[in-house]
Amino acid sequence: MFDDGEYRAKMENVITRFQGEMKKVRTGRAHPDMLMNIKVEAYGEFMPLNQVANVTTADATMLLVTPFDPSNIQNISAAIRSDQTLSLNPSDDGRVVRVPVPPLTEERRREIVKTASTKVEEAKVAIRNIREEARKELKTAELPEDVTKKAEKSVDELTKEYSNKIDALFKEKSAEIMAI
Image (tube, rainbow, N blue to C red):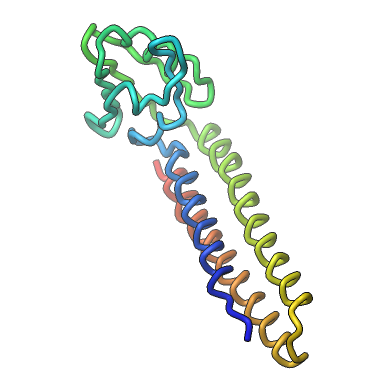
């Protein structure tokens, strides 16, 4: 008998990864995950920002970055400023880095939605690849034809279910981005 549990788990991982990607997408409100991909040069190597500082939200339009070692404050500011995808202009007072999050223009919101839609396609491709993997396993397994057909139908339904979940998550995120 064919067990789709393994493929369901893989598709669930794709959804989890997609949700993580959507958290990184800027919505106009300050959120610590916005700075998740920032790499800071500290102690002679590049490190993720969360390993050299604590990132919090002061309010809906301000992020506060508190370095663990105050000597890294200039490098933190430079790393945030150099990330062109965020278009942020941090300032520091010697103890913390303040990162004002400017409101998004309508045009910028549309660009962000368009960029996020590429993540949707990547997630859907990953789901389809898992479906193909399951189909290959079914072809190599020596199962009766009726069991194979039933299993293929089950895999197709699973693919559709997870594809719809991705669409729903993207629709929700798009609405959040476009809300003023």
